[in-house]
Image (cartoon, rainbow, N blue to C red; front, side, top):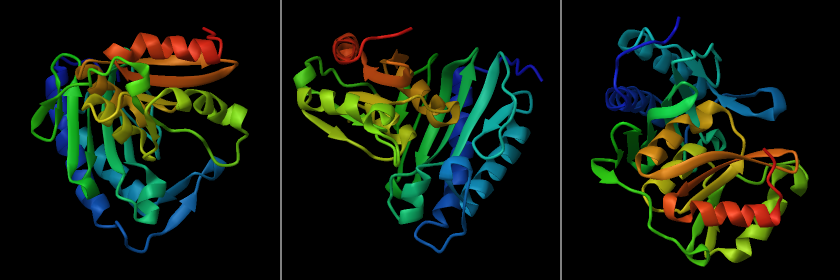
Length: 265
């Protein structure tokens, strides 16, 4: 399957929102309820609702966009060189397991390996975002844009660091420790998709994390780009990171990273 299609990003973002909303209703039914939990390689938890949500997403996408392949966190898949759906059936599974409301269904499209369109639905927060690079970004019904924060000391950043059981120099905690005193404040929500969307809607100014899988970031990165933000990989000291920012702070944040950790690649 090539994944070729004439569909616009705007159309795909609406399809993503429709399907992610359906899956989020299923997931919300298990929130703060007893759940069956198993563990994948690396001790990553997976609940029965992760599995059921991805099954629903795959079924609906097969009906609505049969020409576009799907790659998901739980069942994998084969990406296309053109359009590919990436789905995270519950982004923030640990939050979901613990009754924390910061979790979401994340459904995005890459075009030629680059985030193109997507939607993120956070049912316990009663929030959703969607957007595409050929249109714009929305938070619920309202168009949204990245913040105009331009001073490093005024920035509120969010991060996916650190990780359990990893030394600080591997997890990236050493990098975050050096950056934290230079900004106004730091947040950590536990959902890459929501954090990227909150940079897109101006809540945060910067998102920094270790390199993640495309299903973690595709939708949120597409929405961030649609909102006028920037998204790029960052390699330093043999470790791979990903960086999402508002446009105003991007270059200064990259410069700060270069000062604390020499850039490679």
